[in-house]
Amino acid sequence: MNYIDQLLNDVKWFNKHKELKTSSNGEDFNMFRICGVDHYENTHSAILAEILNPKGTHNFGVKFLEAFIKTLKRSDLIEDGFEFNLQNVSVITENASVFGRLDILIRNSQSQALLLENKIYAGDQHDQLLRYQNFGKREFGDQFKLIYLTLQGHESSNTDKEVVDYIQVSYSEIILVWLDRCIEIAVRSPIVRETLIQYSNHIKSLTNNTTAYTMSQELIDKLSKLEILEAAYTISSNMNEVRNNIVNTVLLPQLNEIATELNIILNNTEGRYVDKAWAGFNFSIPEYKHYNVFMEFGKIGLEKLIIGFAPKNDDSDTFAFIHLKQVVGGGNNRCAFQKFPIHPNWHADAMKAILTGEMKTIIKDKIQNLLEITKEIEGI
Image 1 (cartoon, rainbow, N blue to C red):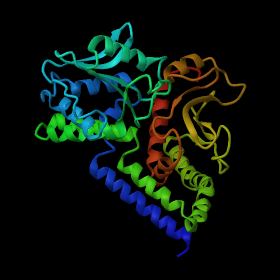
Image 2 (image 1 turned 30 degrees about the horizontal axis):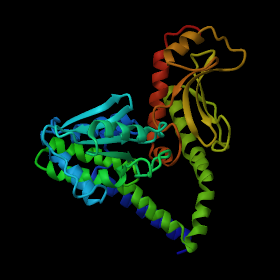
Image 3 (image 1 turned 45 degrees about the vertical axis):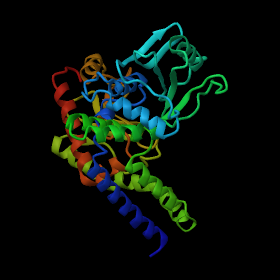
């Protein structure tokens, strides 16, 4: 077996194994990701504050906060001698003062505090940590810790650690370790436990700690070996040809079938679709005198697909255009269109959908919908 055959078999095994692993551990399903909780620091701060709050709705009292402090100690980020009293603790988000707006303030009745500044992707403001340190000194003397939380635990970009005493905490390690401990604590409370698991998995996704990412790195390491590299490049250099071949030999016959089934006409033949600007597909509708249904990629490489109506030619009557654009839901000064609902970028998943027939169903349903919502428009 040559290296290309070996590599293809290895990658096939890898994809199958990764799919089984991610489906079995449930990583693909995550409500935090579905709801868009990615780079919004305020949302992450609200989630962390609720977990840390002894009065939080999780009903585990001080246990999660206590686990957080212990995690920092075991990671040598704060000294063992620092004792934070867990009585009468309050947790405040977006704590505003003349020194700025601190993301999370955890304080107790003994004038002790944890000051937490949360950074996902946003940069530091001018003298931000210095201002928060000054706030801590004024309010709590030397009984506070300033925590700088980032995805990977990096240093502040504009703060001198000789001037500001702050603790670098990472989502990728410290927060994940702490969440694991919280999950253990909440083992007998299914809703709290599963929510913590979901949030932990979401953090893993943001910090490239998922099973899929780990396995992808293993594949990258394999492809980086001398004896495999040439085979990898050979396969990679032919992928556009593979995609173009799938479009010409599989998709176009499917589009012809759609045209026959819907009593419309496909105006496309085989060609160079992958590396052509404004590549796409066009259907004539016998009942429509001035407009065709079109699908068009806004970017070379079969990316940013739209679908809608375009004039048949430059002489087409566009009297109905304003109404058509309103019904379709968008467009420009010539065409009425909308984003393609599923697989707007045609890479591996879209190619698989073509080969399985899923793409044919999606396209047919979309065209039928467009014809249905525009059939009462006069002059189209």
